[in-house]
Image (cartoon, rainbow, N blue to C red):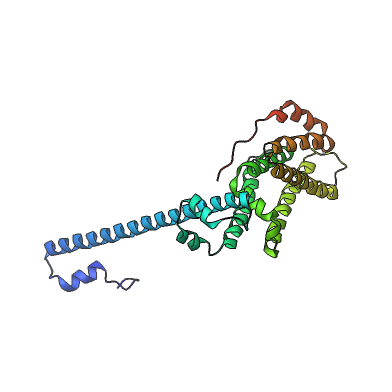
Length: 274
């Protein structure tokens, strides 16, 4: 017996085949190899089928999240129609309830997905190895691009701000989003100070306050643009914010390099689609 409890080929053959019958031994070996290959083929087929099923499930879930986010952004949570979500996602109502047992679970999933997007975005920008202030500007650009063009972020942000959806869970999700944003800005400001890119008067308490102000200002501009239907203005508003703020906090050598880079005239972002 082997470790699995199955008889090995040598033990089975030795017990049933007379010595010297090499033809029978060869045939038995071939038969055993055929069985093993067939078993392996079935296992591979099962794995491929399982992978395809999992891929379809993930695609269905993502389609539902996008359709829900767009519906919540347009109509709000309570007026958002599950029928519209199912239709726009191109799936059945059964598929909806398989992934999300009720409407609130769908809204919570949109918010969770949005927070995951912010985490991935910060990691991606950080991986580019920019200097801390350049990284801060890149993060800001990515935030604006997602707020304007990513349906998950647009719908998730609308859910967080929906006055009819206030709850402990929503409040915690909102706190996570904005505190995470403040922490990301504060980290880059601390790194900039350590690299000698900030004016000396910006100590740690001032940098923390500045991080809060940056997130609050971007959030305020976004709410104004969202409410007035002027999403395209958000890019220019945030650009103007940095043009006013950076000369007050950055050192002259960094500012000189920044101004000669023609940063103020960088192209507007393309639509972000998940």
